[in-house]
Length: 266
Image (cartoon, rainbow, N blue to C red; front, side, top):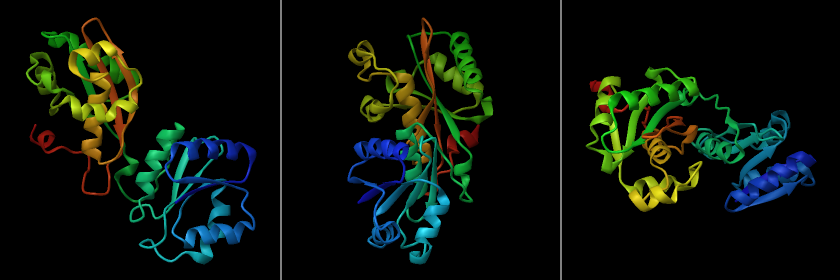
């Protein structure tokens, strides 16, 4: 069970939105008696999302904390959902991963302070193009997108596309020039990211089986490298001959560190 606990009217509005988006979530607005009810939720193993100050949460839960292996995950959000803080059980309880997911729902930023590489986001670029698109055209679009996103080339982990572009000379040459692995995925894999796309093209779907090559490729690659859901940093940018999008991800705790073996060989 997920309990979304709010103490103010603005907090209640955000809590209602979250309970509509999270499976098995229940809104708890000003539970009474507050301390006893919240501690009971926690001791029952319920995952908790608080929309209030972190100090209130810590003072309330401190008497019933056991250890990081048994305590349920606890998140704290501000009333606008701009920041999502995994307060308890970040690693073992999954609060760090959960914070990433909730931040995507609120459009906020996960504030993860664990001593791990969550603090360092990584990036992947997805591209689509017409057959025979020149390297110069693809490179110009790629570099323009990096500039729009405020990124340096060395921050990108991989270039990716759909599998029917696995032999696309321009994309292969671009990856080689940038020193990046070039990853391609089939339509079924890319469709796993369909709900995260900023736009959907029925024409592209009829042609290649996905609603958007650049965004879905960037997102799927990021998830494979990071082990967590990714988010679009830069929505699809389009020229007359190609498309490009950038995804951001935070490496997970399961051994993924965002560095692809193919990248290390370059």
